[in-house]
Length: 271
Image 1 (tube, rainbow, N blue to C red):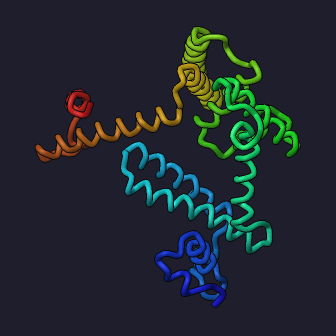
Image 2 (image 1 turned 180 degrees about the vertical axis):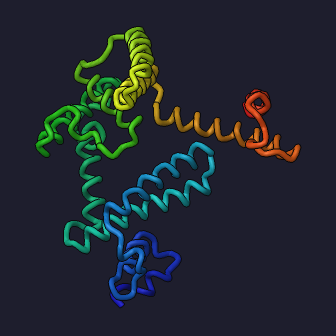
């Protein structure tokens, strides 16, 4: 076998144990067939999913679950790193050293000789200068160049807007954003009457983009706000299902008026 079985079975093996488990799972002779077949792209969706499950555990205040979900997320880093190691690209120590170097470099006021006596705004400005220099060193000189394309759309919209705002491309106050929402809503209504699905989708996207901008001006994270709204909707609809079930009915056997009344009850009971 190409792995350390004793370490794998050691309950106190820590990080070396996890790395060895991943190595064993990917072993071409004795590993797991499913794990052997995976690549970066096939694993990437799981990586994103695990990050959201961490956020969900935090939202629910479930720290036992958070411990488990953080382990699942850590496994994703280990998985990608094992594949890279097999290809001779980098190993886990390289990953750890890279993020450590980055944190030290980006915090000269903690690890260097810069003063910590700065406002939060000044810290942000200094952070952006450091990141701009990093982008330039990677030949990514554009302001938006390193905003990841694979982010959820709401999150990416907010990051794009925030990045542009830091170089002065932003409305000066919220009234302009509200005016823009009215404008985009009118354009969406107009597009609806033109029987052009592509144009309608474009205008709908424009409206969503401006709503995200409104959230940014209100210091609201759009992705988090919508996640909470999804959770609230789910809980209230489950209340409707539960109440209907008490009378032996399903939503399909109900009607909008009855379910709407139960929705109002849910709003009172699930505050």
